Amino acid sequence: MQPSTSAVCELLLTAAAGAAASKISFPVSGRKKLVVYCAVCGDLAYGKHYGINACNGCKGFFRRSIWNNRQYLCRFRGTCIIAKEHRNVCRACRLKQCFVNPRAVQSEREKSNGSGSNGCAEIEEDVEELSRSGSPPEVSCISTGSQTEIGFQSPTNGSKNSPAKSSEMQLFYERKASKLLAYHRQIMDNADLFVKPDSPLVVPSEVRQVPFLLAFDEYYKISNCTRINYQPESIANLRDMDLDWRRCFVLMREWLEPFQKLSREDQMRLVKDRFHHYHWLITGYYTSRIENPDVGVCYCNGTYFPRSPLKQCVPDETGMIEKTVNELVTPLRQLCLDETEISCLLVISMFYENSNLSIEGQNLSKEVCAEHMNILYNHNQARFTSQNMAEMTPRFSYMLLIFMTLNNLSKLMVSQLGDVLLIHDW
Image (cartoon, rainbow, N blue to C red; front, side, top):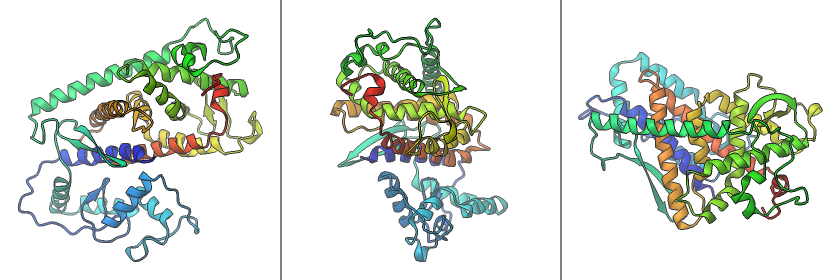
């Protein structure tokens, strides 16, 4: 069910557009609107959607593609020209144009060289479409049948916040971010220094596998609490790969400890449904911090799975490693996420809408996502000054692609995860 991914993505993009709009406060009443055109196909645009000027057709196409996680293939190597007369001819190039559009860059350059009135007209459109406030917006999740829409509302029911209120909200989320970062570092540094990565498990030797219930409650029986080390010191063998998955299982369970309001049954469902997402996100993030981009994928035990087929311990028949490097590690490296941002994204990757949870669990998950979205928004607002606030929109767009990639990588997993984790009823 793909609305979960789109909900997160739309929220990120709306946040970015809202941030850009809220930073400028020119009076706009009585101004004549400037005619703008769709940055994708050149048709008449009706305001900004997902951070760019777009017509209703391209807005709907982009939204459907993301919500349904659609993948298109171009027959002409991605060289198609997208124009309003035949914008439906190649959906692959049209979707690519939604993300990377030279015309949009040129448009921004022209506006910066032009008169100030053009900028005011652009601001007027942002004012009409988006709700603005100086403080981080609150998130509301509204269920509409089979899909969920997530949007921003001001903390005071639409009324403008005073500077004191904005500063108070900013300080509130800064403290939240500090606590989140401290907990992330605590988990990553939590290790028994006297245990080697290849030491025998605490599971008795006569017990080869454990039930999921036991693994969930006593997760240290799945993996020793070894030191986390994502440096590519040696090439991984099959055992190293298994140990990495088991150690990450312990990491995810430790991440869930602060969220005890979620019922035990829902926590177990969440672990089963989102462990793949959590593993690939944390693996991709720490791999992206390695200076050598061609090393492959780094594991948490000081080993790595190389990109070169000649060095791999087992053939990568599904192309998992190449996809991980190209579609996850490379975008993460370009984003240059800091530890606070990856901490927020790790929580969101676990909690964004999951229809397998109970009604109470789904509602609580929405609250958790909303809180960490606000933390992420406020943190980005602090990172980007008013001079480069425009960088937030494309940056959040790439965050959108990360969640799509996590879904795709999870579908490619062909091995039995229960065998890897020593859980016989996974």
